[in-house]
Image (cartoon, rainbow, N blue to C red):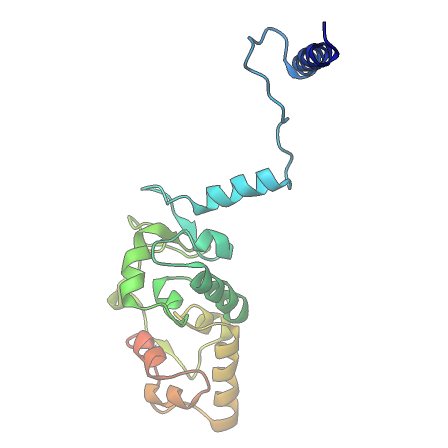
Length: 211
């Protein structure tokens, strides 16, 4: 046999032996040929596991699935319809700065969130720690007529925080203004407090009073 053919034959035999070695090492007992699994289960934190986690967060919401706006990460919030990564980060930042939203009305304080978006995401969100009316789903709004208007001149911090769109910073601003300038003579005086523009006053219409 010519030397070239001998080398080729030896090479083929070597490859065959190597292939059998791979099968012996990785093939599980009782598994038929072709079922070799080269990679073990991916550990948490591995690139593959992170990819699977990203795919999980990127999947569409189920028909009955809800996202808790008070605790969700920006990645989870981005799964809501018409809420992308940028707006999701804005929601998380606003929550950290001003406190819980407590309702869809409170979520409206985030720049970029408006009535149209609230209508779309309403069925898909929940607000943990917020009491809901009997027979309503989490995140549902109580009718304004069922609420007792809050007196701005006697309201405590906790009472102010229960109002939509008012977090710790705005509640403190109201108390500070009341201490420095005296009682409010009318609800429109709230516009003199830092952070309260026309849209904020509109959200609070019917919920506050200043006799």
